[in-house]
Amino acid sequence: CLDKTGTITSGDPKVTDLLPADGVTEEELLSLAASLEQKSEHPLARAVTAAAQERGITAPETADFQALPGNGLRGRLGEKELLGGSLSFISTKLSIPDGMRTLAEGLAQQGKTPLLFTEGDRLAGVIAVADTIRPDSAQAIRQLQGMGLRVVMLTGDNERTAKAIGAAAGVDEVVAGVLPNEKERVVRKYCRQGVAAMVGDGINDAPALTRADAGMAIGAGADVAVDAADVVLMKNTLMDAAAGIR
Image (cartoon, rainbow, N blue to C red; front, side, top):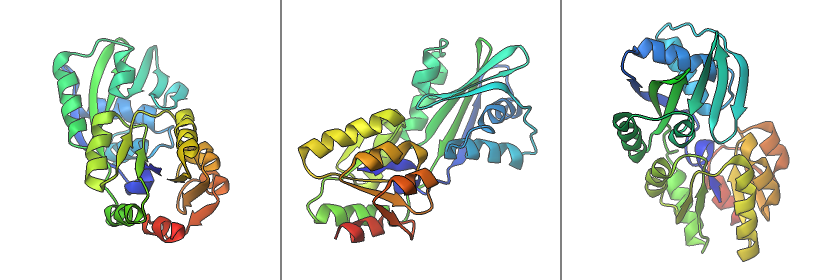
């Protein structure tokens, strides 16, 4: 089982598309988004704040910030509540116009992650973020498969984005939309079916790394992931996962 962000991919995503809603400028959308994201430690959050900085946009600080694992972020700017997150999460909070929903779904099919942002009771727009597959990930996955292993990609990303990246990487199966606490449950299921290894790099991966028969942490990942793992891959490459299992 392989985590996606920072394991199969580089973990250094970039903003690729800005789609403000009617009456909102790109600068306003980025400022609002960066206000929320600057308090998050997720790689996608760093991409949004970096894009705002590159444009010289100053993001006001939000109050009452709250991270909602697997869904998004919540905060308050003045009298208005700000929300940011996945299409499925934001859809539970307000009605998404059909045109914007279609655009978000199209971005996901391209392997990008669409992030939606709201201010009060209105949609501010969509920001698409894309991560690149590590140059040697597909080769490492082929090596794992060559040893008779079934390779599964686990990710909290939406299904369309995950399947696009999974196809490019060549994994056997994609399990998408997995909340952090669900990764451990998925790995437990595979442990019952046979012997299961988990490779990950993030805070969200620690329970799954502990649950697996063999937990492998990407060396440049979060300290808690490194602490939870049986094996640390020092060179920060999936090729070492294949070498370690061999």
